[in-house]
Image (cartoon, rainbow, N blue to C red; front, side):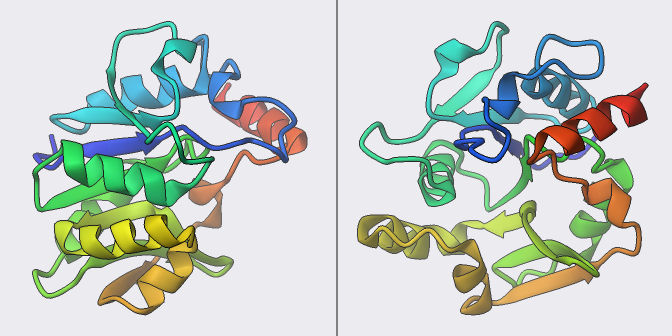
Length: 190
């Protein structure tokens, strides 16, 4: 079991899906979020869910709420995460990547180096900013970005000491952004 905390980001707009993807049924559970939360609890000592509203979920969990005045933005989730959790390193994962497995987390954690600000998964299709380790050293920059309304994680990672870990298997990072991707993932999970 990994000793670092894990935060599941489930507060996005889901505009491409057309409905809140965090609430879609998945893997025999009522929601994709609950599916992710239950499996992550078997891997990490502590698991939190970053969201705008905890009351949309029908199960018990540790929720970290975005500031109410902020529209949908991952930077808000990162600021709230680092204010709530005092650990130096935190693993993050987007709710819509249900096939990222224990081996990926293990490699990211094993690759960690105290001189980096972030350790991020990367595949041939690009980097995956919501699958990686983030260090507390980034909090001040996240706060500045949030105050300025700048929500570009790629920009933050490019200007920080970021280490990218390359993974061959693109299918493990499948994102459920569109209805056809959700349907494909449902077939795959069964």
